Image (cartoon, rainbow over all chains, first blue to last red; front, side, top):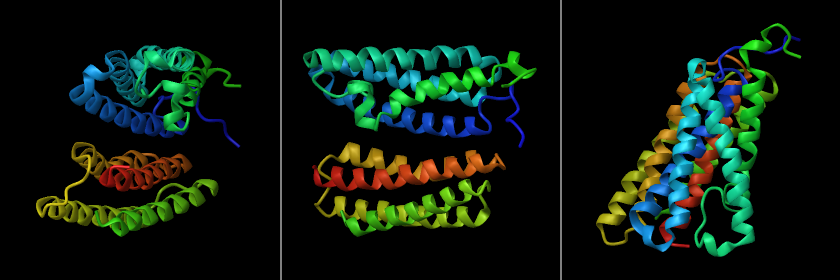
Length: 140
Length: 119
């Protein structure tokens, strides 16, 4: 039984699945936010602006995780932002629903997307830590 | 919309998902035969595009046209992109990628049916 090679690209091995999941979420969030911003922006400016920001962050995270290497730092930032976003917006959406009259990808901790937006950044951070170049000596 | 077509696509992609899951469990990568099944699903999706275009042109468009077409066009790209991404990796993880993509396509069929009828 061989351990996955540490310090390798973030986009291979299990990371390939992570990137695929991010890709799906990036497309879903971009698409939803495009419809919201282009068609109904006046209805819920805050929620729809957040949707757009979330979409951009997911696209950045997908690309940064897929490329790895020099984009690793960017991946940390994007994935970290997602975790902060889903926790903050998730809490706010439950505490004061009036702030978000319509769903965003982060509302209710991502319940509209099967809580994938909550789970994915945690997996992403763990994966980034695991593939850290410095851990190449001892992966365990 | 002729929803049996959407359900046929969903059934095909779920079958592909099951196959990919089975191969992932047995530590096997994606193989060419799976991509052929994926191509079959893609062919059904293209038929779906034609049917939806004809229905729209003959006076029964989807309830929410922009969303419907957005979903349908997105669906077309999911399997080819995922297949390319998965095939670059010759480990079990390629099978998991295909699994994710196939489940996504099946889910999108459900959304397509909902968006067409406006529910």
